[in-house]
Image 1: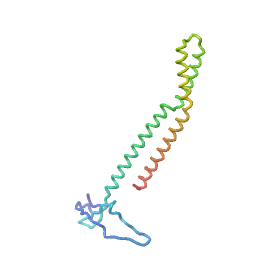
Image 2: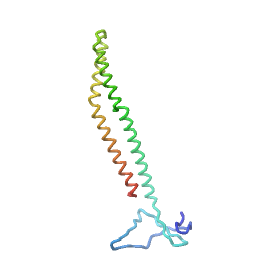
Image 3: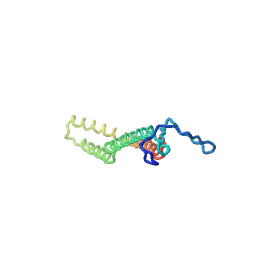
Image 4: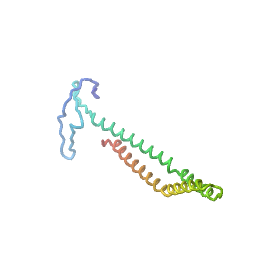
Amino acid sequence: MKCSQCGNEKLVKSSIPMESGGDGWSEISKKEVDIYLCTSCGHYEFFSMKKVHKYEEMTLIIKGKRDEIAKLETKMKDYYSEEKEKSIIKRIADIEEELKNIDITIRQQQELKDELKNLNQRLKVFPIGRDSLRQEISQKWSKLEKIEKQIENGDF
């Protein structure tokens, strides 16, 4: 550590002999800040490794939230995209057309009916899943923005 006033590297841990009062009351929390005195010029230096650790912790939380959002957005793209919905609708139409063919076996017909049933169920819950995922992504963005705002304002 160096004194920001004179560059001296000999700093000693100290407390600050200062109190303020009245309308401009000021208090320095000794739990949050380590205070050092420059042995050359008497300048006080304030350091807060606790704040640095809290900042690092919050940046890790932000990274985690961003990763969670990215995974959810990938899931949205993979499972609930408009293209996926259109492909399900097209497959349903294709199956319905295949079922009209009188030359298919009973086994093929049953397999197609089972697939059709599954696709119809999936299509039925498609908007619910998509909306739920959108809401979850929105909530995570909101939490992320709050944390970023805290860091921006120094409230950590």
